[in-house]
Image (cartoon, rainbow, N blue to C red; front, side, top):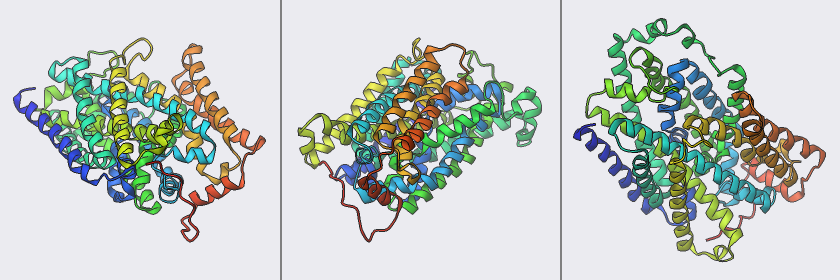
Amino acid sequence: MNPLDWCVLGAYFVVMVAIGVYSHRRIGNISDFFTAGGKMPWWLAGISHHMSGYSAVMFTGYAGIAYLYGATSYVTWAFPIAIGIAIGSVLFAPRLNRIRSKLRVSSPLEFLAKRYNVPTQQALAWSGGLLKIVDVGAKWAAIATLLSTFTGLSLNQGILITGVVTAVYCTVGGLWADALTDFGQFVIQLLAGVVMLFAVLAKLGGIGAVGDVWDRLPPDHANPLNGPYTMTFLLAFLFIKTFEYNGGMWNQAQRYMAAPTAAQAARGARLSAVLWAVWPLLLFFPMWAAPLLVHATKPDASDSYALLTTQLIPHGLLGLVIAGFFSHTMAMASSDANAIASVFTRDVLPVLSRAARAWDTRAALVAARVTTVAFIALSMAVATQVNSPVLKDIITVVIKWVAGLIGPISIPLLLGMLPLFRRSGPTAALISWAAGLFVFWLTNYGMSDVSTAVATAAPVATSLVLFTIIGFLRPENTPEREELLQTVNTDDHTTPHPPARVIL
């Protein structure tokens, strides 16, 4: 990078912080900070939902998969996410929106205390929060790895820079800042992606390379399923991502909750699904073509995209492309920080502290901002250990840890909203959660030679089966829970449900 690139990157950081400061005026209470007061336009909610699912892992871990295995990187990643979100636009987006509008809650897990009980809420809150610290730590490490390639900064220096900038804007402006910066980052990554695509096409001989490149790559690179990414893996990934990207990890749930109505939440989800189906094709093409242009030095080829960028992109535009890398990670990390802060502020602290149950508006907002900073700081600390023997590497954390643990954490929340699972109560929720965590440990650390597909799918499958069977064998549906489900599953406002107590 030369001074021009640094100026472009510095301008990007300044704009992100400025958006956060601008958004501050929209924050009057906890609902504004965590769910935008239910006033976010459907198109902004959809773009924000889409952007909050990306990170720089795409340009490291998944770029390596594209380099080594070809088209399967899209078929087994972006495509199932698009399908999963399309399913969620029908099953989950409207219901999560009604949780906010009809139950008057600001955190998705506030619903769990009513649907099950406080112990269930706390179990999912703590385990989900710890998982997200590890998950976001991997994202910080990914972007810091890229920054190190371009600038020579150390991993820890890169983590510090990105973490501090993100902490400033998402702490000041809440979910409004997250969404507005997501939109700005979407525009930046669009420009950066187009620049990269045309640079690669020019190097390969023009637009005709779009079709010709597959004849020049190894034959199996055109296969939709390749290497360890089998049909079993694809189906497992689709199943898992349907839960994760529809609110199972909470930050996407907030986008659904922030829309004005259930119908607009569903509309925003459909927009996000379309973006996931189309946009990654443009981003992946340079990664697929990378073996023809660069030689990756790392065994997992996670440095291939960075090498491609430094060789093909001129200074100035290089800064723009790097800003595009940052846009993915900062969008996801800020949304996760806001989601975790909402859960900790609304669901954990009031249980731990009597004083927290009596906070006024100002005290609640201070707590929300302090919690946001604390989450980012903890995830940055984890990021410095992402290549340790326990976590191993970035892609292991993202695929194995997150995919393996998402089921036990998300199933009681998402399936608990559906009438089909009305018989499943606190017993089913807690047993399915605990068993899923145990199976994750067993398949990843207690047994050897377990395939990636099995290790990924077994925990969520265990939780789903137990949640369903225990509900039928030991039904715990009560009149109060039936009334709650009726509220979440209908748009009838003639007999509104009494609002949940809001702690301010």
